[in-house]
Image (tube, rainbow, N blue to C red; front, side):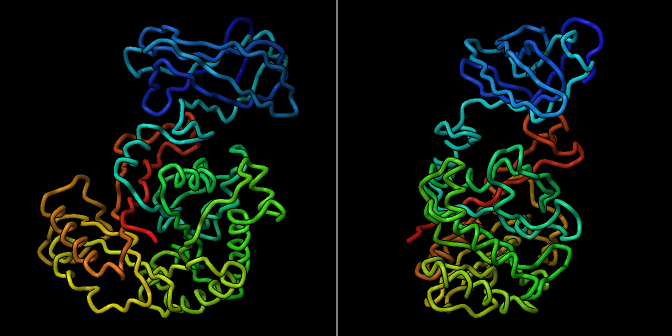
Length: 429
């Protein structure tokens, strides 16, 4: 930012569709680069009147060659009449020796659920808690696969790109045309599961990419090792390499993860050509070190050992959901089924053929709700076979995409908002 002349200069950030100012403590941070020795002011101000609701003065010394990390708090004692407010950061232009300063990673957090660092919104968490979810699946379905291995930051979701300091997480383009900063990473998701008493089901890359690429067993080996490293990070003692890294990042005690899912919908995207071989390779590697882990296949259309699990997805119109009432009646009880995703996506049509390019229906509708209830009842009746079900999607953003300068986001403004992963119900044993 240019800093010619004298006086206070700065910039403001409107947040995501405004900032709700109430009596509470806000935690902020930013990085600064450039020669500066003086005060920087962070404030929450009204965009309508210019009224300053809360401010903090920060002594800062920074240099040209390095980024300086600045943490601060804003303790509000007032309630703003509207959310049309911004975070304003200003500094003395005369003390910017190089006539410019660079700012990056400008962030402001209200209190989070259970006061987790880099945590989640209490209102959303309390709403989800009221639904009594029993399990959560990360990083969702297609998002685990990635768009392409050939384009930087568009490959599969990998755990080690989502842990550690936020500034070091590279981010990637997700599968649903949104940018994933990695801010909600592996640690945050596992804490999310702990806070809502949910069983985590962790998705891993199976070798199928959304652009049609399918890896062979040799090409898959680095990803198998990456999965073993991830399991050591989650489950290993602090005497192990990755268990020690977990402790370094603030989690001395391991988490409890018992289920990992191998891929997503290989049966719909050409992956069945070698999915059985890829599953077997992962199964052997994982079970050799972690025999208590259940490896969930992402399709019903392969053979799995007794005691393992298969995932079934069903997006359909009301009539087809009702017609499938008896779909699972003849299933064996030796391999259980996770219904990882299901939803009535839009009303009946003349053909009742599902057009997946048409997008989801934006709001619930009566016949769709009834068909989902019937579908759920039919899946629940043979309970030993399908004790776990997940309806998509419990949370959807209807607001416009955040701007490129919005707090906590580096997403291009042309990218629409993202959708959540599924709400998951049913007992876990």
